[in-house]
Image (cartoon, rainbow, N blue to C red; front, side, top):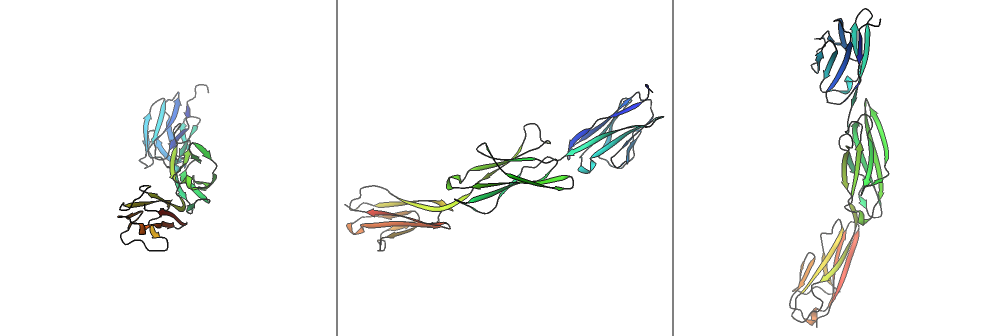
Length: 289
């Protein structure tokens, strides 16, 4: 019995779509019949001859010492135990287990409702397909934020999501939040990342900036209405106290120009702006010396 032939199998892990090599080591092989079967116990190769019409399998090596089976474009349903069977006086077999991993694609990050200052925004990070489960984490400025994870199994793969809730102010507008997926099928230190830029809406503000501080008769007045807000107000309305603007005045968006100033132009000039979240105005008092 100490001199009997033996077969020894190695377990293998492969990425979906990749190439796997399943090796059966032969000890003291004397030319007996060797059979390799797939997990469904269908014979793939019988003594080196193809027995199943699946071109993805090929016999890479068949020597007195080993048998190497190469599988191209591995699929999830290829997973399981491959039988290396040696037909000697006492039939001897070993099982090589093939495991197929599915690495995650870069996550998909989406926002729920519109984010308005003082409110809450809900971001979801989705990995529709991975095996085994990925680990999802949220970051902002390299600081980890707590998300709430859930998953469903669909056959052999997992669908998973992490939800992040954030209170937002206008200073958060434009900030970058990152969702990161790590996974055993990705190389060491590798990760899949998706960045999301926060879009925080807020009411407008308006401030009038005069072109010069002291104005004399005959000078030209140029007022600029500095506007902010998200969405940015597109329309600026200029007015003068309870009177209409002088006929010479040119109002072009954020700029009001009044040439050839005279004392009768004195008064309060205002700009008004608005967006979906509110309105704002500023007033400038003109005194011509």
